[in-house]
Image (tube, rainbow, N blue to C red; front, side, top):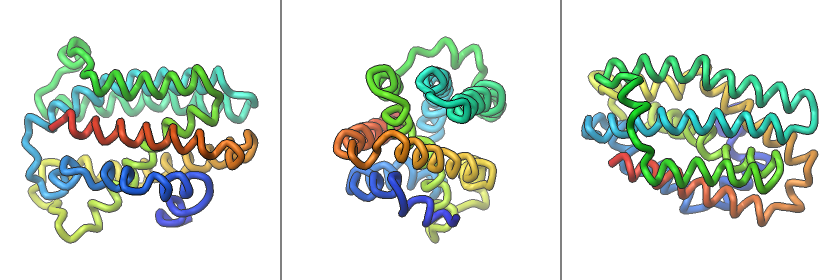
Length: 225
């Protein structure tokens, strides 16, 4: 399945289309455009990296909750694999990358969560606690799949500068096949969960969740500036 197909079809594609200008504001935020152009102030990127570290801790908790909310062994395995991937793979990579920007793990762990980080991550956890696995998957989707779309868009955009861009590694990481495969797996999981749990019948509520999560993603970019 191509990247465009991943974004345009099924339940996720419908959510993304109906999020409308909210989705456009997220994937086309000035923070994102400055990443591509290589003009983002370094202080803003460092702030983002620290808050993203704190965010990943809560994201891992969300996948632990997804395991609890699972109703089949396949769902449980997928949630467990995602949590382990964040804790044992993504976070060490993130810490190593942050070290290259002069940020130690101890310093990041000691940094308070920004209010935008708290608002976003606790919203995701609340949707999982008060709803079911589908509600949680929808709340998680803008982050996972949005980063895949953003990086792919940046890499293809004529205004993006890769040579000499201090943020080129970030773009290449999320545009690369490993992360794109992860995003596709998240979309596939959402489609299966939606089919099993009456996603289209519950669509208005799911769209509200998706729009809110997307708006909170946008505020996360804004906070970093």
